[in-house]
Image (cartoon, rainbow, N blue to C red; front, side):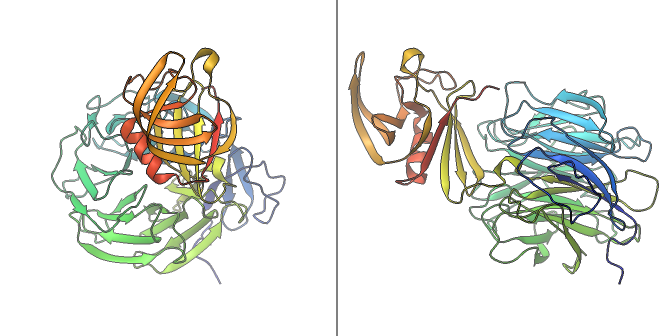
Length: 469
């Protein structure tokens, strides 16, 4: 029986080793460096492999495909994840690097979300970027040379929002010019979808829904499923809710939905949409999110499963992102799969805190290995450095009078102790977060300290380390 992919299409996906034999049954490991490997879907012959980040193991990474040269052949665009400079890299399918550029100031380490589409109908796609968590809600557009195009960028939401964005692109109003669809990924009790033209003008076509309460990292994709020139919107709630893929009209009404993975899976679903085999029928490609295996599934637009495969070791638990592209002249598209969170492949279940007292000066909150939020801090200065090591929250107090050599601070709020006198707490006497300032404790903006106080219970693991970036 011929499967959905028995058309000779290539499967392009990330594993983490240089496989010595061209077989999906080969021994695989996802605990080392992520490698792009290209496989033929029928023969499973290894076609190529490459490391997008060299010997760096990223927290996460983002991908898109784009025909930047107008030759009918797509390039693979890779965006940096959290913890890296906001670099966008452009590769050929053989892994050769064409160029790279900074999408945002080099000091920003929140990640770069990607989309790609041809806005001006010149036959060449543009690259759309959106800032990840920690940055302002800025959207930018670049040409294939990494030069800003149309405008320098715009804020999709109020500048005070720093939770990160998810983006997609498609012609949602039938004017033959694609729009940019934007959603907030974090801190969003209501999911607000906004739609912009490529000059940053809000087209007032979006909607707000309460269908995804408490979700994180909404996934978006667009496709004209009705053949009327107007793209529909596909969504998944992201981490924290069931793996339901929802098909919606662009102004919000639900057309249909289906469960992409088992009901008990709450790691989110990454989406891509394309006519994979040139039969004129759109397929929906899904990748299991964080805590899921490298499980890629292909559905029709009614939610009927057509085919599925594991892009690597089934024991890998970092999840996978998916994209589609045309890397040769045959009528079939290829599928691109990358680790969603490669550095969290063997993450411990439960909640934990990671405190970087090095140059980054950040406190990050993880749940089941997935980064939930990250905050700027001020750690110990000079001889009063914060101790490094593995600890846990052992006491919590809402209000403490702190005294010591050179300081007397009443009513220090939201105090979480992790090692003897060393604590995480709110701070009212300075706002120079991002720089070492304390006597050894972790100073935080008071609302951030309260969030940690409420979120991290007694016994929550705390890792204090000093990374260099």
